[in-house]
Image (cartoon, rainbow, N blue to C red; front, side, top):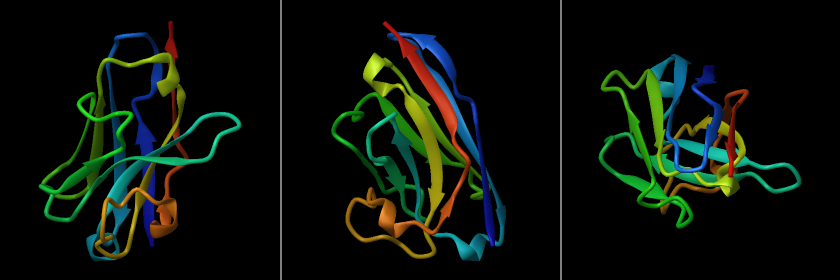
Length: 126
């Protein structure tokens, strides 16, 4: 089993920054691809960024490219999302997710991920 716990969300002004963290517990061998998703009220959950086990291969949704950066600790026990130049439309609950295999392609489909955290809220005021 894999347990994921997010932290670091909050309320910021437009243009601000946050650093989201996801602590992963359980066997490292049970998780491979990692990703961040977000879900705004009334909208579907969307993939924001993904990272492959090599920690060097990353993918981003077009809406966050050049503003968000995904990374993970060398021990693979913590996943990060640095979010810069925040916009009101970035307001959402942000979720950490883990897949049990290396997801082909961009790895931004929620159907590829088996484990989910409880989420951390990001609110951006204009």
